[in-house]
Image (cartoon, rainbow, N blue to C red; front, top):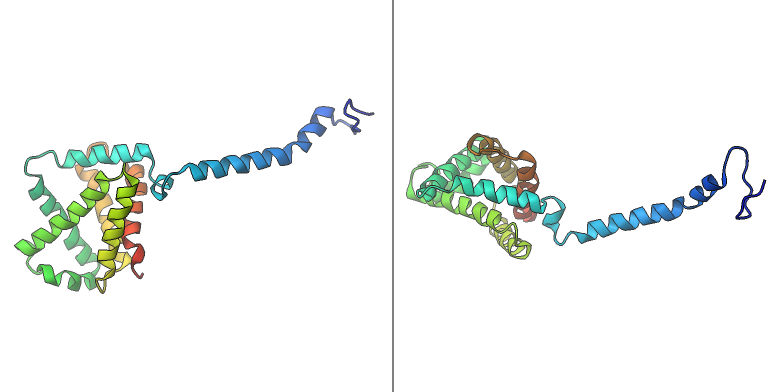
Length: 196
């Protein structure tokens, strides 16, 4: 039998089934186009792994940590513990901290370095909603670490693991998924110019 469109409908196939099959390539092209539009709509690389909602969550949770008027002392202590754990888990990293007196973790040199590290992280988190400034800051930090012989991507991975283990203990309503995506972006960008 012939359908209204001049096509022959075989067996149990109706005219609608024949027409819908002919639209499959068009629908596939439309789906691919929509996928490309969604991918291209991401304004910056950070948008691909750290959503606007993730950034809001992280910034709100991060601010909770530093509400205290003694936040610089808290940052020093927190940074010191993270860096000492990095050295413990990566003994090869200890030499990287000799110039800042890692042998005496309560020294002014090591305390100042711990604060610089936490301030770099603080700056990165505070710039999450300004992708252009964030990219510039992370690129600068990447350059600073690239020129230091012996710094490896593995050290940043350890830093991330330590921080992600510590944050749930000190943050109310810690959101692991938000932190994972955004923090991975921050650290992989800083470590991007390093060897393995």
